[in-house]
Amino acid sequence: MPLQIKIHKKDKRSIKLKKEKNQKSSKSTPFRERNIIFVLITILILTLLLGSLTYKEVQRERYYLWELARSEGLNIAFSIQTLGPRFILNENALKEILVLLKKEGVSYIDICNDKGLILISTEEERWNNAIQISNPGRINFINTRDKKGNRVLQVIKPFNLDISRQLDIWKVLPLRNSYLVVGINLEGYYARLNQTRRRIMLNYGIIMVLVLLGIYVIFKLQETYIVKKTLNEMKDYTAKLLETMDNAVVSIDNNGIIKTFNRKSEEIFGKQKEEVLNKECQKVLNLRVEGECILKKCLLENRNVDQEISLEEEGLKRKILDVSTSFLTDESGKRTGLVAVIRDVTEIKNLNDEIARNKRLAALGKLSAGIAHEIRNPLSSIRGLAQFVSDSFSRDDERREDLNTIIQEVDRLNNLVVQVLDYAKVKKLNITSFSLKNLINDVVELFKQEITNKQIKFDIKLSPDISLIQADKDQIRQILMNIIINAIQAIPEKGEIKIKAEKDFIRENPAIKLVVEDNGIGIAAQDLNQIFDPFFSTKEQGSGLGLSIVYKLIEGHQGEIKVESKEGKGTKFIIILPRKRRK
Image 1 (cartoon, rainbow, N blue to C red):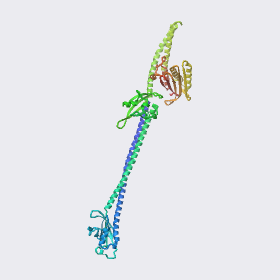
Image 2 (image 1 turned 90 degrees about the vertical axis):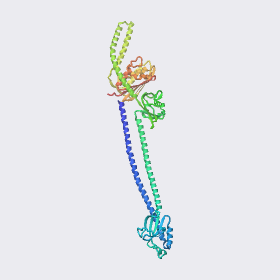
Image 3 (image 1 turned 60 degrees about the vertical axis):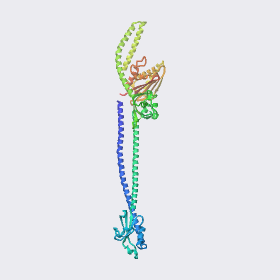
Image 4 (image 1 turned 135 degrees about the vertical axis):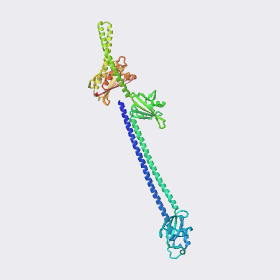
C-alpha cells in the first residue's frame, strides 16, 4: 500500500506539471493572435501613410511642372514684349521673331486681338482662328490640345508695345489691346510627371517592402526566439522530469552508446553520469544476460524485454532490477535507439519475502507449539521409566550405561521442545533503559573467557555518542549471544569478529545500528533466504531455532535484521533497533 500511494502522488505531480505546460501553451496562442492583429493594423496604417505621402509627392511634382510650364510661357511672352519697337519694325520682322523664339517644347506662338482672333501665328493654319480669353486684360492659363492631340498649356498675356511712332506693322495689325499666346507642349512635362510618379511609387514601394520585410524578420526572429525558448523549456522540463523520476532511465543509440543517464540511474548503478555517458553500455553497465548486456541484446535481437535482473557488482549491495525497454524512432519510423526504464524492486522483493517468512514462521510456530505439547508428556514418561529401570540395575551392570544414553537423548529432545515452546510463545517485553554499549562489552568479555579451542580476535568499534536504549535487556543479550555464537561456529580455527555500533534511523525515528561481521566460511547464496526459518540449519548438531528466535525477538522490538554473506569470505549481520520503542 505505501508503494501504491507513492506512485499515485508521483502521477498527480506529473499531471500537475503537464497542466502547467498546457496552460503556458494556451497562453502563447492569444499572444500570437495579438501579434497577427498588430501586424495587420501596422500594415494598414503604413499603407495609408505611404499612400498619402505618395499622393502629396505626386501633387507637389505636378504643381512644380505646372509652374515650370507657366514660367516658360511667360518668359517667352516677356522676351517678345521686351524686344519692343527696336526690332518689331514690320510684319515680317515680327514673324521671324516669333519663329525664332519658338523652341522645342513650344507648339505655337500667336498674336490675337482682344476678341481672341489670331492675327499672326507661327503656324499658318492657326491664322484667323479664334481663341477664348476668360479674363480679358489679365494673364490667362488655359489647358487645351493642338492639332496633333497633344496637351498644351496656353499662356495668354496682354501684348502692349510702347510705340511713340507709327510703324509699318501698325498699318497691317492693330497691336494695341492685343495678346500674346504661347502654346507650351505639356506632353514632355506629363512624361516627366509620369516618370516622377513611377519613381516616387517605386521608392515608397521599396520602403513598404523593406518595412514589411523588417516586420517579417522581426516576427521570424521573435518566433525563432519563442521556439528556441520553448524548446529549452521543454528540454529543461524533460531533464527535470527525468531527474525527479523514481525509476532509472537509460537510453542508448543503435551502436549501444549511452545517451541518457538520470539521477536514479546513478544511485542504482553507483556510477556518476560522466563515467557512463557516450560510452558503450556493454562495458560500463553490469546488466548481463547470458554474458551480454541486456540493452545491447535487445538491439541485436530487435525485441523489447520486460524482466527482472539480478545486479551484483563489487562495492554494491545485490539488487533486483525490473527492466522494461522500448525502441526509439524518428519521424519516419526508423529505429534510432533504445530506452530502458529500470526499477529497483529489491525492497519490494525483500518485503514480500519477509511477509512470506512471517506467515511461514507463524504457521510453523503454531504447528511446533502443538507438536511440542504432545511430545513433552511421552518424553517425561520415557525418561521416568528409563531412570526407574536404570536405578534397579547394579552400578556395574552394562545395561545401565545404555539406559543413561536413553536419558541423555530424552533430555536433549526435551531441551529442543523447550526451545520450540520458547519460540512459539509470545513473550511480554520487560522494557528498561540501559546502556547497549556496556551490554555489548559484557557479552564479548564473556565469550573471550569461554573460547579456548579457537584463536578468535574481537574488533569492537562503538560510537562514543551511543547512550541509553529502551528495550528488553535479557532479550537483547540473547540476540547478541546467538549472533556471536553463530559467528564463532562459522570460523574454523582462527579468525576475527568485528562488532560495530553507531547511530542510525529506522522509519525516520532515532535508532542504533549494530553490525556483527565475521570472516568465516560464509553462507551459500541459495540458503540466505532460509536462515531465519525454524529448523533450518546447515550444522549437523544445530536445531535451526537460534536465528529464528533472534528474528522474532528483533521483530518484537520493532527493529530490522539483514544478512549479507559470500561463501568462503564471511557473513555480516546488520541489526537496527529503535532507541525508544513506539507504543
